[in-house]
Amino acid sequence: MAAYTKVFMLIVLNFHCVFGNSQLPLQDDFHGAKPTRGEPWPLPQSYTPSAETFSLNYLSFEFRVTGSTCDTLTAAIRRYEELIFGERSKIDNRLKFFSGSQRFSSADGSVNSLSVHVQEACDTTENKYPALESNEAYNLTVASPDSQLVSNTVWGAMRGLETFSQLIYEGLDGQFEMNKTVIQDFPRFKYRGLLLDSSRHFLSVDILKKNLDAMAYNKFNVFHWHIVDDQSFPYESVLFPEMSAMGSYFGLSHTYTQANIKDVVEYARLRGIRVIPEFDTPGHTQSWGKAIQNLLTKCYTSGKPNGNFGPIDPSVNSTYDFLKKFFGEVAEVFPDHYIHLGGDEVSFSCWQSNPQITDFMKKMSFGSNYAQLEQYYMQNLLSIINSLNKGYLIWQEVIDNGATVRPDTIVEVWKGGYQKELAKVTKLGYHALLSSCWYLNLIAYGSDWKRYYACDPWDMVNGTQQQLDLVIGGEACMWGEYVDNTNVISRTWPRAAAVGERLWSNKDVRDGTKAAPRMAEHRCRLISRGFQAEPINGPDFCEHEYRGV
Ligand SMILES: *[C@@H]1O[C@H](CO)[C@@H](O)[C@H](O)[C@H]1NC(C)=O
Image (cartoon, rainbow, N blue to C red; front, side, top):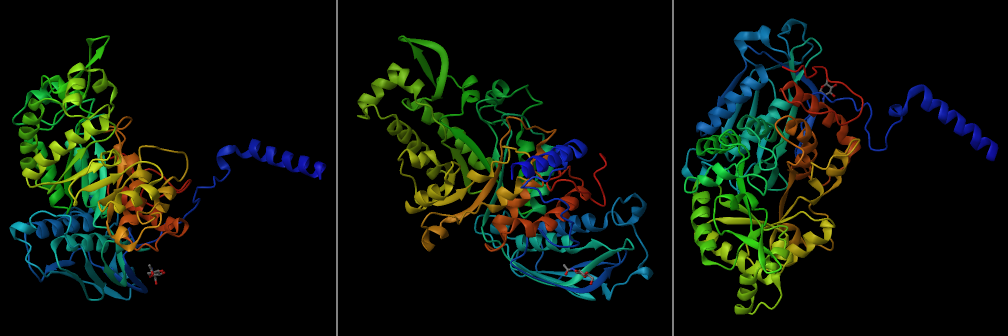
């Protein structure tokens, strides 16, 4: 037995020497997952492809609007026309899908048009922006000679156009092909978010837009914009322009003007994506304090201010006067009904050191319970937001610390042991949003998307149906400590796609190994659409590689 082991070890060691460690398959890798052809990501709720193949003539293919219409629909159709066929007049410039020649096609027929039928009026004020309750369902039938896309709303039509574009693949002769297919589709969760952090590193408007494109290609519908934090304050306020003047990293080149923000919000709207800004308080506010005097708590050592500042000072009225004005502005600038108010990681030590706060605690009979002081602050802030007729999201600590909030509050669960945390939050009757297992900034060697793919918002400890119904979705988070314009796209994509499918597709779509070939195609699709989407299945290739242009 011992001798046998030694011989075996020798062979293994030899193997290492000859091929090098990197040749040994890692447990998490999906080596050689061969890309599918023309299969959608995320997987539709009901997807019935067939082996019947049609060709598309890039010169004569038409999109036809047969239902209601509006600017968002027209813009979406124009976008997808361009995405699928490129500029038809400049065929030679196209990288992907060269013109080919229809006469070599082995197709069973051709698809000449897609009729797009939106049933509800889409040019109304209440349908101008996507919202939490928007209906994103659509039905898509790919047939010859004409295909049909039917949806209630323009948002559903956008999701369907994306799916339609994904079903088209490059035939062996280089022509556009797609299979006869029937799809009935709708999202499992109505909130499918992605967080980017523009405070730890500044992100340019172009990169934010690029990311919004990638989100649309993965059916995400909320951009959670963690716009400011301790490190920098790039939001250029109308009422308090000194906040970004003094709190941004490097003056005007590192700020978002009101025009920039309008631009991002409009770009997102046209893609059916909501923009929810996060202005995190009372902690995470060091950059706010640079311009606003007496907003932050002065920290003390041995009875004297030591020059450091803590969280926002909850004990003075000037704080709430400022917050009323500031959030009044934010409520107008960002059209979505929801604002994220943060509320995470509040350190009590500075509050504890400050004698005025100690006096205030006595006056309020809080004893030495600083969580009660935090609750006092949050409740004041929440009533300000209430008076602005906005809804709010908060990080789970607000609830963990025992604050009571409005019943329709959305509580974002980010701590470990999420199965228990989700159960706790929903037991209290609050809406919950999961992000614990989707901190994509925590990178690891190997195919880590499989872990994101395995995590599910319905994995709740002893969750009743009522509790499961309170989970509105989840968010992939890309925190910015080590992420800026140079790597945010490649680090986020296609890893976030795993979360996209988890939040959109049926709960039974859970097998990562089965999904890997579709993921491989989807990564290549993102590359052919111009994204630096990083390899995630181990050694492999795309037919059209990223070429740095
Ligand atoms: C599409 O049709 C081709 C040719 O018949 C077939 O090989 C392929 O499996 C089909 N794709 C799907 C998703 O069914």
